[in-house]
Image (cartoon, rainbow, N blue to C red; front, side, top):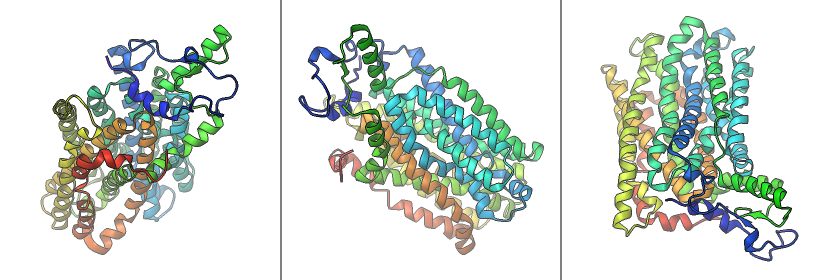
Length: 492
């Protein structure tokens, strides 16, 4: 039976030493420390029933699926949005799509500390309700500026499931079984961006672009209802509530949670709020992995914003047919999901057995060695088949390679971070989300200028040359990752 040791490890390091001035009042004895009641305690999320775990993972995966779906569903209808608001600013039109990604920069800095201070479930519930409200507002927006602003706010609160989803899975799934659960969760960020434009491409001509947001409202409303079925899974929050209850029942005010850091709520919130940024810029391993994921994520969104230009102008596609062009990325992403999900746990178990039963987070990395090769291959394939206007299926096949590589990279990186940063997995994921959202929002804005200057061939090839530099990364981390993770510019 798995224990909660790995989840508690980070908090145990953060606990003040006996006699520390950080703990006010009488010092608690060992009998005053509140912990789970043994390794089989049903309150420990790792001991939940399979049905409860599957239900929680399914709900979190649904929440995670809807955000990226809504981020791209408007992409084929940007032209209609600009015409409706009498605007010819194509960059601002692209920003209607990428603003959703940029909103993910601000959201995690608040969401991650909220989840670590107040718990996962309440954070999911509040943000899901706000997500629903902001999508209603988008549907009735009366100006382009208002639409962009509301999309930013919607994305900020909607980023909750992407920010803390990996941490939630770490709460309830043991390390050796985590890859399968991560495969279900990662399906949202990977597949949904490809499905959104297909829906938008058919819905916009039939009902108008505002109905895109009404459909989004319906989906977010369903998610808001589902969020209230989530049970608290964060050990810190569970033990905090258990401690409060025991204090009321026993009158012993010296009781404190085993995971109590000794900090007050405001101090802990401020500390946790800046932790993702401190982790991002304080850990070279986290920064470089986040940068690579961010670049690939940005390339995907650059494809989303430039597909209408390439397939309408070069191949004569209609708006509805352009929506089908996104299937290449979706199909490749699904293939990468299946391959990586099936292989990652098996490879990790095999390497752990060879290492005398001692597991390492780096044992998650071998599939990424394939992913870093597939991404540039897909970019170069797409670049030159589109440049020479070869049969339309060929550039779509190129994007399938890109989608497969991105999925493998994203899934491996998320699982690696969860295993490597344990208790602070939500903050590590938030750090990656911040950089991914920032680059993913801004780089696609340069897509039209890049293709105007260099053409599709060389413009996309430049992007391919950049990611070539990251090919040695997985090999380096596999060999030196354990030592590299210990190197930090400052403490978290």
